[in-house]
Image 1 (cartoon, rainbow, N blue to C red):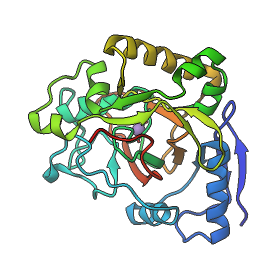
Image 2 (cartoon, protein in one colour; image 1 turned 30 degrees about the vertical axis):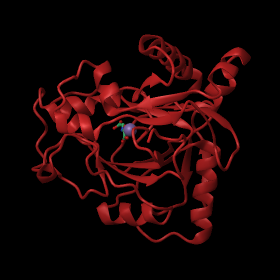
Image 3 (cartoon, rainbow, N blue to C red; image 1 turned 60 degrees about the horizontal axis):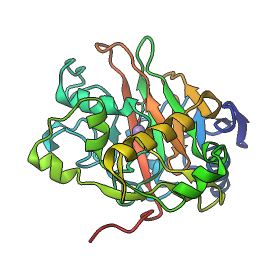
Length: 293
Ligand code: OGA
Ligand code: MN
């Protein structure tokens, strides 16, 4: 079968047909998927009823994986999935829905802010691959915003101003925005900020992008409140509807996005309903900025 893509978003995002992710892909299919990611930044595959092993095999055929160890508030003995997965569900180890005030749930609600995955790591994520195993009766969409288009639409003065800016990213900054402050000393150390460029160039397409994320909470050399409001204005600009594709999930959907050229966010859904979403992630090509020694 040959791979077909059809654009479904405003200026990016495509649906893919003609791939069966239960079986190993040919080198031609793998090349077509990378080319599709470069061109569309978000690829949607429907009707992929796969298990963890099949999701891992598919992810590994595209590149080196990132591990999700120590990135949430789950203790090591509370993991529901192997650490090769980011558990994006609202479920505990026994597949029970978290209580409304569970700390792990409140931390995970940070995913409802626009972000780019693992921008809080020195080497941030390349592709994220999210598979829907169970979905709520309503809500729970995932929205994506296209950062090259958002960059292109900036005026020349703003492009010049941001060209060399460096931001500091931490999961504490994103959680502070939603009023979550209660971190332990161990968590504060684990979530220490890292540096990322605010503007980046895509290695394959050569296009320039804004590199924004809710985890960005400071700009090196700027007063914090001025940096925060500046970043907030940029996020507001970059997430205007003409740059956004909203995905409505069906069980078996697998959605892949390129974190180097998109932001995304989860949308709300009924708190007592299970939503079992499992993410595998490819590690990026390297740091975007030098770190402080
Ligand atoms: C993620 C994420 C959004 C969602 O998997 O990285 O942010 O809708 N998911 O679950
Ligand atoms: Mn995410």
